[in-house]
Image (cartoon, rainbow, N blue to C red; front, side, top):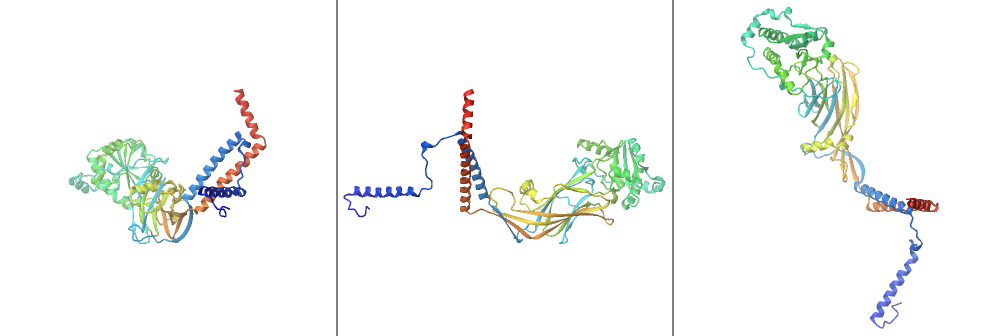
Length: 497
């Protein structure tokens, strides 16, 4: 070795060290697992080129997929007690979002109510709730706002006129009832008058009974004023089919007609002589306002027979109930005419958003909505009269952590199970009730990435495996003559062209 020699000069020392290094590297070839084939004995073929392109594409795709899986992570589920920060002002509350269609109930008297175990009760909620009328084919129509009814000014009916009515006792006798219409005479009578007000009532309704003297007084005053409005009555106890055809479920219901065509909406003003006379004398103005707003006034009966109720409610995180029912403090409802068949397009729960933009983003995220609302526009039909539907929801909170760069816009979502049933009741009006109860357990879903050495091992295995398999394919193609056949066919095609 170099150590035993006595170098004559520095140049000899450098040459000796170089010789030793070359001898070491030359000895490494005996450990070579990847023996190289001389270039001059290799042959390039068209099949080999095609296989190489395929190999490059497959290896690139597998590498990208494995890299995405590594960054995204694998979901790991765990269950724990829900222990969110209760110091937050909205920690104990969340939103309930709903979209429910009632094809056989009009929007006039549908009430959205909320009750919970803490004793909180809110009835006929209007904020963040929209009611959309539907016709018989389920097509959405425009709402008829209450402002079409102009309020009656005080004194529209003078005290002298009222005094004259009170002193004339014949006005209130049974023989002085307004025209009574039935199914056979209704359309002919309505068609024969330019303007007509029709009172749909039932004998057992206290509100209808209270309206009788007011109705007769208003008819007398309109007659003395030579108004062009005729007044009539339909007794729905005897003419139930006619009332059902007219879309009447609440009594009394007062409708305005112009030459037999219904002028929506139904009268919703005060039931006083002053207000009814003012409404009748301004019928032409209401019709003009409706036509200007683009509403249809060409049918005998109202066309909106159903209603879609859409909205969101702010509720406490305690067991509670959301109820859709009919409510009015001035009407009596015909239970036999109430049909709460419904279709649930959407119902979900989510945390209170910090802004309207965040709320909209959550509602428009289809991946979230598919997870949190399992209703899929399911329809629940009332097969018998007086049917009430009840749905029981068990709500479970899911919290997502370390989700990588894709999936959802929310860190927490609420999934729920559904149990539904219906029953007929003679004690109450039919309704639709959604009972919800929150689980004290929280499911945490944490996305954990693989270890770095596992990722490298998988990448090497995918690339090496693809390379080896396609090399076998190439060898098989070459040994069976497939490559030479393809090559000769290609040469012959070029020669012919």
